[in-house]
Length: 265
Image 1: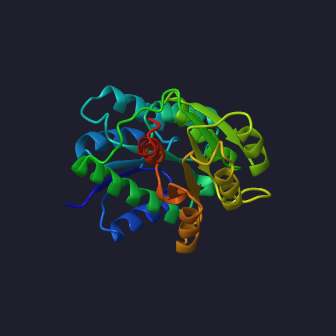
Image 2: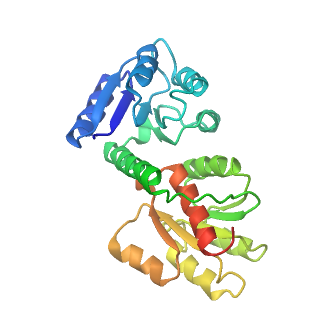
């Protein structure tokens, strides 16, 4: 049976682009152009995923999320935000209301959105049928996050804070090496494209350091070529995750799985 996706968006052009792409990929796709109708459609259709704008006629995206959270019949339906605003306070508010991911329209790439939708729905189906999701906890775990993208860093920091872990952030390899000398983390999330020394070289330095060599490393990058993946694995990375193909929950789940495999959770 085709997965149902509901798009709640008042921008006619953007709505048409996404609706067409969803239908071409054989999703059972629907669209609402205002918040009141959108909430009604969520209750009526019980979609597998909702793509939600924040600024809408009649009822805002936040109001929809708040109403959805109070209605047990629809509260578990996952939501991805597509918004004009990327202010941390807005992202934090959305994440607190259970949003799975957050796209900024100014940085909008329909193919990236579709990759996230495909991966999310596939992963969601897999977890329901096969029970592969990790059940560990990140509470108290020390996580080093090496990433120069401020927006992504802010989102993942807020998400990890809800898991009650201890997060250390470095924007470049030099800062990461300094932090490495101060405290040993339980896991490292490492971007590849960094200012100065790239992630592959930094990974090599981690593995050459007696204190750090056993710390599991997850490479998280926009690169996804086979040779990049193989290089990462050959240098000792436990996972190679492509940013465009993941939801925040899937990143968290991979961290838990890697910690479990390394007997650190």
